[in-house]
Amino acid sequence: MKHLSILLLLAGATIAGCTPTQQGAGIGAASGAVIGGVATGNVRGAAVGAAIGGAAGAVIGNVAGRPGQCYYRDRYGRRYVANCPG
Image (cartoon, rainbow, N blue to C red):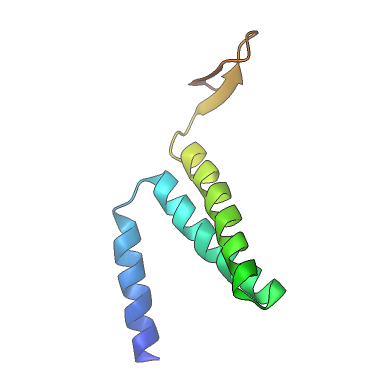
């Protein structure tokens, strides 16, 4: 139990200095790996879960890092960020 507490403390300390995008990717990858490993029972499922979770977490973290900002597309299909409508 003592080793687990130290491991969690170190993990929390390393992620504290990251941007919201990096935090989201790290948390998503770790969660995806656990879920994928449990669901499939093998390492391949854990790897796929980590990849999907990391990508999804990065997207969510990126949006969370810009409060009050929304993504839009203009009529030419270009994506831009602007203030959300109030």
